[in-house]
View (cartoon, rainbow over the protein chains, first blue to last red):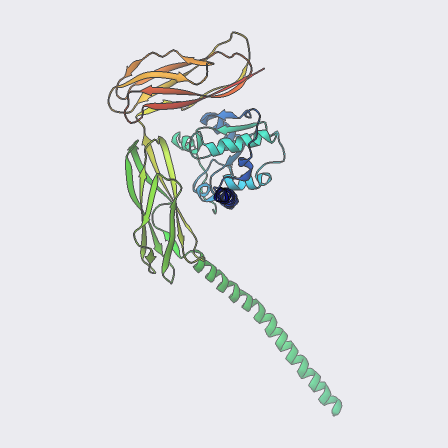
Length: 154
Length: 254
């Protein structure tokens, strides 16, 4: 019984340390995602390359890039804002516009990125109902030869 | 006389003060400029002792899914002292990274070898490599490797979206997806399955010639206003990739 209790305490302590440690990592699982949101999945719309290109061209949407600053510095959709996944969930208000009616397009490098989906879902839950996920990601954007913006300190 | 001496004394003190003041006024900006230059020099020396020789994005060209690509990231130690590589990391478990030598002398080239395994990847793939140094004053080095992975089976588009559709009883919506055979041999589509009964396809088992394509019609029959993240699984006789999954977003409104 004593051994079992010790084991439970050890597992609980390891879990707590793990969760705490995660909060300090750029790519760690933010505590906000550890708490189940419940309810129906929020309606996140998908966006294809051509619609995203139109939105970028006419500056009719805010593009959120969930990659790390060093990846963001390599290239990005013109005018995109860097919202690194971990940093976004630590301080979401620092990356979101005050106007909740604005069109927000979230993207990652990979097509169908889970990170981009989670950020988009969080925004929809937070009242940014005009949020879309750019499903093909920057890889799809580059493959179709769309222009990118380069540079910027990581 | 005493008064004149006093005046001379006052004047000398004033001259001395003026001299100190002038020199001070003159010296201060000079001191500031020198200090600033030194600080900038020190900062630049500390900030950029490492220079990447390889391009920031190392393009590895086009490869077939499953192939491993080997390469190197090269940098030069442009600082005055030796560099010690503390850690080398990649953004993905699919990329193994190893420095050839952990110590790099001034003006020498450091080499970090990598192997990228492309199993299960398709399209443009990018992975980041990070090189950290023991000296905290030396900036971490970021390099990116990229490759275009040609999968045996490619879907165009890679996802299907039925969104913003108003619900009408008995209505039917359809979209088309192409299955491209890049395997270099005939490929047989065995089955296409959806994880929801809202969608079905008009496809029957068929063979796709090398570099050929098959057209699949995806049909949606909404039952009510709902939001569903569905998937379509395409099963083929490809030994390396028997299943290919296509996401299908269904967003039917009132």
